[in-house]
Length: 385
Image (tube, one colour):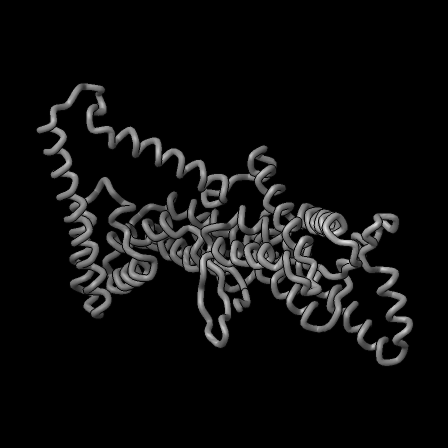
């Protein structure tokens, strides 16, 4: 079983609504547990009043039921998922928007359960499922820190969310006392609302939300189809079989050379031979100036090599490496640190004060209170004096 902890996407504002919802749910459950030790009949009456009324007559229960839970595992499980996925969704929706979305998700999932079952229900899982569905649309390419049995690991966010959705779909045929239909409707509600907000541009697009990923994939496919049409050159001229074969051989040779050079740099880094890796990396960048993404290494190798060049004083190449890391891994947890180091290179060593100011101003808006933000603000103050 995967237990999600947090995503690797940095927040631009402090989390408040998610923490408040978690606190309210936990306080209510503690009070119910304490009251149950003294007056079990009163607790039963509260559950009868607040649980989801599938007839729809007690409309308020679509909200009250989201704050009642049966047992500690029930409430803790829901709050863990809310804590893992909620902060980033709150960050995108804003506090008021997220609050409205959360309660709307609770109502939508409650309606879904009422349609699918005549059994009363309690729990925040429908609202949390809506938040999880929204996360899938807004941040599909982020990575989640999870605990699997006793191991800490990272998995792609889209994989974890789809795994949870599939699990609920498979459980529909089982009588496991879990409102799986409410979960599924919650997921669909979160996915649908997020897609609608992105499509109508009510919610600002980001480079890696699901709608943008789909559109970029479509564009890449169209470009690839146009470029791989063997009969026509970019100018539309007819090409002979001999010309097609020659161009194909040239392209294959270039791709092979690029792959070999990348593998060479990666092998040197893995061996700990960083100085030779720097030399090989410079050759890689020089040989493929028009392919910045192709000549970018894996996430860890790119970051480690950039840090080594920074420390060793190779500022020009370090700036190139940091810039490519930021461009390729913009949502990585180390991206803010890479941006700050690149800004300092521009400011202190490369004479690019305007570029440094632009990076620092962007960082200030991304980081909330803490030593990292204070350091960025201090550098920005130096530039503006």
